[in-house]
Image (cartoon, rainbow, N blue to C red; front, side):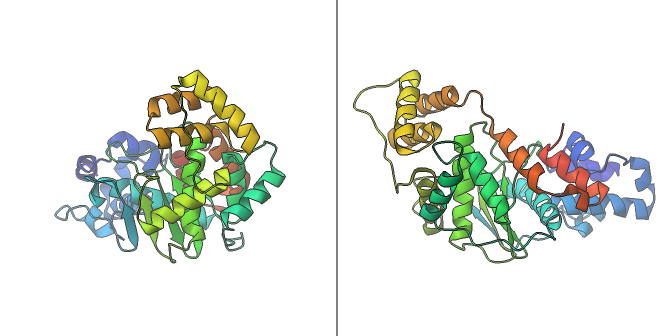
Length: 328
């Protein structure tokens, strides 16, 4: 087991992460003293991190992921598939476990057009606009789980998010750690756009290493357009200003604009950032507008409200809880 820990550590899976997240809480390395015990440890690592069983058991083999086909990476320049593969396969392990807990939930419904879905969400909303909480609830009710990983291997480069098809059920995994509900709402809506436009087939995964609103790639442009229309009702707000604004001024203007057009003020402020490139001002305004909000809370609440963890084995339930930090 020591040799395997050393190999995993070199690949970015440090001992603390292996102990606290991957291996079950009852695990002791002495169990791996026998061939059967070693195989049991390797089986957990295989299921949770995606490494092939043979590469885990054979020290002469280089660690390799079991299933790399069907994964499509959307990456920024200079980022390789290998850079994000560890986080991707870790996320896929959790996604499969979550999907297994939804065997009694009907197959996922088609994601409606953004204009249609926006009207529905606004009619049901307790706020003047579409926000992350409404989107999450609607996605889960469509049979599309949306989860966030909060514990990742130290050596893993995090993509913003990925969507994978587990059988015929889409699962969205958010890895971006931003606190802002408006930022995460755009990311989730972007992934829902991929599902709406049927960019994935059963067994496929689409990894958005960095969601770029200016991307001219067809799949990404369609997903971006879906997200913007769902959140704002427009194809592109293009918010700008004829005068220089600081963070408080932008926050105030975004709040007024948002109330008038039924757009979350944080979304309006972010659109200003996209249009002008003044990200320090935009992000500062969002921090002021959403100082009492935390996307992690909404993601956690939605998962706990819709996912029947009791339908899983104790080990799998512990694994999902550790990976998502679903409970304290």
